[in-house]
Structures are given as C-alpha cells and as structure tokens.
Amino acid sequence: MKIIRFLSLVCLVTIISVFSGFVASYRAIGVFDSGYSPPPIKLENFKELPQSPLSNNAFAFADIAWKTFVTLNWPANNARPLEELALGQAPLAPRVWEFYRTPEEVFLANGENPLLNISNPFVRTLKLDLIKGQGDGSPENVKLQKNLQNSRAWIEKVIKSKECPAQIEVSDEENNLLLNNIPIVDKQGNYIIVEIHLNPNEFKQIVDNKWYDASKLAEYNKKENLEFKSTNSSIDAPIEVKAAWRVFDKNSSAEEKNRYYTTKRVLAIPKEQYVCTTDNCGTDDPVLQEIEVGLIGFHIAYKIPKQQSSTPGWVWATFEQVDNLKVDNGPLGLKPTLSNPDCDPNYPNKGSCLPNYPYVEWPFLWRDQSPHAVTLTQDKKIKPQIPTQAVRLSEQRNCRSNQLSDSVKKSLQQQNKNWQQAFQKVAPNSVWQYYQLVGTQWVQNPPTASQLTSLTNDRLISNTRTGTTPGPLFNVAMEAYSQTQVNGDSCIGCHVTATLPSSKGTSEKAMSDFSFLLQRAKSSRNNVSSDGKPNS
Image (cartoon, rainbow, N blue to C red; front, side, top):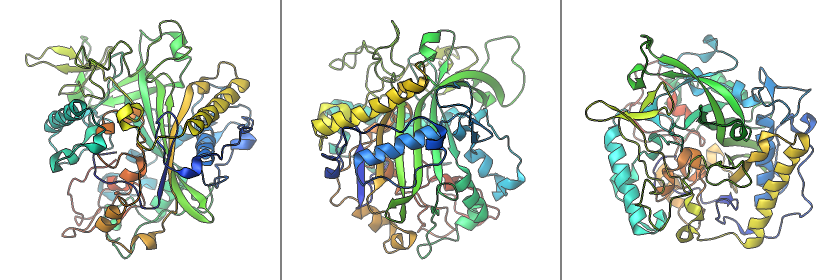
C-alpha cells in the first residue's frame, strides 16, 4: 500500500482483530459463539475454498480467513493438495499457493500471451530488486534516493508529533511518498523478501480477456469498468497472495526454525546490487544465490463468490508469525524478528530505536555472506544496514480510537487460539500453531462494475470519507513504514484507488476491481500512457 489520502468505500466495513486493536463494526459485538471450534484439520474440510461467510460479522470473516489460509497452505504437488497428508504433517512439502503463477510470469514484455511462455510449475527463483522494497514496482519518474530522504523526514515528523498519523496535516509531497519501496531489515541484519502469486482462476480470466496486454486494458473507460468474475471458488473466484520471508543463516537455531514454515528460494540478484566478498565472484547477471527462508507474513485477497447474498466481494486477510514483535513461550534466548525488546519507547532516540523508521541507507545492496543487508560508505567500504524497529501503531495509545470492546477482543483472541490448538492436535510440533490472524476487511455492500461507473473516480474516493471510521490494518513484515500514512491506512482504502493503464492523451482511468497487478501489463502497441503511477 502506498501513501495515499483515501479511505475505503462508503459501504466499507473493516474488521480488525485484537492484534490491531481497532473497531470497525458494531455488528462484531456479542455475536461470537463461545462454543466455536475450527473443523477438523482434514483435507475433506479444506479441499475447496469457502463460498460465503456464515454471517456478516467479524468472527464469520475471521473464520473465512482461517479456512482460506489452511486451504492455501495445504501441502501440495503441482498445485494439488496431497490426500495422504494433513497440514502440519509435511513441513518440507511446498504449499498449494506456491504453485500459483507470479506476476512476472503473467505480464510479459510487449504484452505477450503468457500461455506462450512455458513456466516452471513451482517457482523457487525470485527476482530480487532491492529498489522495489516491499512494493510491486517503482514508477519511472521517481528518484528513489530522494524518496528515502523525504520518507525519513515524514516519519520523524510523525514521531515528534506524538500524534496518530491520521491527525497530522500532510503536504502533497508527503502524500505521495512510496514507503513500501524502502526495504525492511530484520534484527539479524537481513532484508525481508516479498513474493506475489495469483491463483489459476485469476490467471485464466486475465488470459481469456487478454488483460495481460496494456493496450487491451486501455480500452476500458468509465462506461465499462473491468470486473473479475466470481461465481464459484473452484471455477473463477480470483485470489492474490503476498508472502513475506525472513532469511535464516548460521545464527538461526533449529529451535527457532521449528516455529516457521521454512523452505528455500533462489534469488536472482541484479549484479549492480550484489556485493561479492570472495575471489570467485563470477560474471553472471543476475547473480543466483540459494537461501533458506521462513514465512513471517501472509496477505490474502480473495473475491468470495457470495460475500453478501449472491453478490461476490473482495475479502482481505493478513497473517503473521507470532514472533515478529514479541516472543511468548519461546525457546530460551529467542528474540523477536522485527523488534528489539531492549528499546525503551520513552527514549526512542537512544540507539536505533525510532519506531518504523527506515534506517537503511542508499544504495540498498545484497552481500553474498550473512548478514546480507549492506550498503556502501562514501569511501566504498561495506557497511551493514541498521535493522528496522517495527512497532504496530494501532496498538499505541494515541491511535486507539474506536477501540474494540474488551469482550470482542477476547473473543477474537480466543478464535486464534482455537485454530492454533487445532493445528497442535494434528501434530504437536506443527509450525502452523505459530501463526496468527492479524485482521480482515471486506466491503459491506460489494459494488458491481456498473455501480462503480455511476461516479467519477474522484467522487467515488471522496465519498469514502463520509461516515466511515475504519481502523488501520497492516502487516508489519511488509508495511512497517506504511503505518505512518495519514489516510488510506487499510487494504481496501488503498485498493479502491487501483486503476487500469490509460490510452495516451486520456486523463480519466477506469477502475481495476481493487487489483493493482494489472498495472504491470505491458503494451503490444505504443498507445498506452506511461505516467509512472505506482502499484501496491
């Protein structure tokens, strides 16, 4: 999510769990069934994604989120869930979502048909471009070093004000900062790595409609908005996944890694961003390096077929590994991944303790040896990057407006515990017991494409500020810096601004049904405007 001054749709209802600490709907109060328990963790209960929520409240959508999380993370072979294994019984097997295509496999040069590109069914190689940080791309006209300097100044302003970011006046320049283009560094001195996937249903719609070609997308206008279909979870319901990884190295103990879903990735690192410290550096570009990684963040965007009655609607859910900010009941000596517990919030200037501050310095470079996150001094010496001190702003006292009642917070917390206990029943050492749902969001009355065309984009976004008070929803593993944005501090608040590429000479853009991925499309003809609008 980028720095924007937009909130969500007028009909937005945001539900955020106790981990975020903000209320979004009075409907959440008093509706939790104390006898609720997850279904047995058997494939027969998770072979298909949920089609609709049990009711229209916080706990029902949290239930949807957890069921979707389990289905996507079931051990798989060639995207098919393994019948003979349950979640937690095959810690080394790839997951269902890991077989989904990446945007790099879908949006090819010159708007080429991705079906002509034979891709690996399980992508282990990730293109690491450190100038993209946690975002999905940098607009061509952005000076990244200047963006880093201005972002630091803005976050310092937020910290000094001691106010919640939403209460601070923001300039146009501050409003357009790209905080997600700045990499996050964990406490072991390694960059957080992010990858994105889209499910076969979404891929098929993109191919069938030729949405991989920006020239085709530019044909849409305010009279005909693009809309993803969603009539059945197994036929056409689209899903987008964003996963965040931490890097394990020689300092990572077996006890620590046993609390994560771990796997391996091969990074394809641009040679100009790679620092070689050996005599055998090679000349390949990009440079390939295999690393062991652990899952610390997991975003899901799912257009559920029957979100309200028979109307489909997008549901957002975000999960984190439980040790990101604090460690409870962990091995002796285990410390949080993204937070230094020795930092005193009353004295943030002491040490590198400024909350959600990008201490990283330009240029962002990857060293062949751990810790991998480094930069170069003016005299060209290698210097380790300073880790990020991540803090969840929604848990801070000055940002707790519209707080959930204590009973609702306890109920949501218990819902998480119920799922964690269900994973333990399958396998006492299951890594999935160490993941938690941070929160969910959805559109109360999901609009159709025809309804969206009744208003101009500016009017639609302007109307979102009337009568809504959604709380922030962030994943600190991906959006530690973005928490400081003034408005648009939620999944829907950001994605409501997603638009399609436009024809040259056209200023008005069509909406892209809450998906930023289509902005990655390349044109088969030279008829698409290149204005450098950032993705999310």
